[in-house]
Length: 314
Image: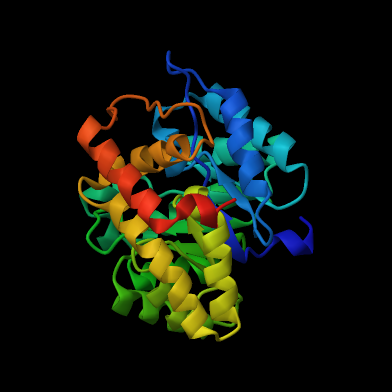
């Protein structure tokens, strides 16, 4: 495991996944989307087979094919982080081993839906889940931390246990959606003897989380505004808060438009953004997601146009 790939920093978009009209993977438009992302100077990596790529609807073979395409297009330019989305621990471990065999540079490990019935009260469940996955691979792992309101959340004591007892866990994707919890987690992890990177997934309040402290951004919204995320990240890193706020003022209405209720349509809306901006041919989604209505498409198009998104993103 090369040292330079054991830590993840900077802007790491989670790519969207185009489908054809008959809901097969649209390889041509996926490659087009990835090439646009890779034209962005300063990316810290690309995440695949995650929420943004509708992983819940993909077969095991489709997930492997998507990863293969991403690896071909990336061609070693940045690390490729593959999602491990599986409820059963043994199967999640097998998937992790396959991701390593297939050439991924790191893993984004989702919590098991089994945790939804009170797993936050049994921290040993999350630790055991991650430990068994870690035993199956040498790859560095990012623990996906869900919102404080989610039944899949892992509380701070559980996060600290994961990060201190499992060597492979080198980062968290922090999506608590509570800035107070975020800061507590940030401070607690930075007080550890082990280096753990904190990747913000606060897509609707990204500027605030970066001001508290972050080692990077891991977000599906980066599929639409990767270059603006890089500008925001670089400005905060340089302590240019006025410059960062100016960039965030561009991103904020787009984040509000994409992540408003119902939240489950967030990546659906982002995919429409790619269509509207001419980065993919058409925004098809797999069931149970449904196409956006005509009224919402008009509202989104207006928000994107008023933001100057096309001018800001090549």
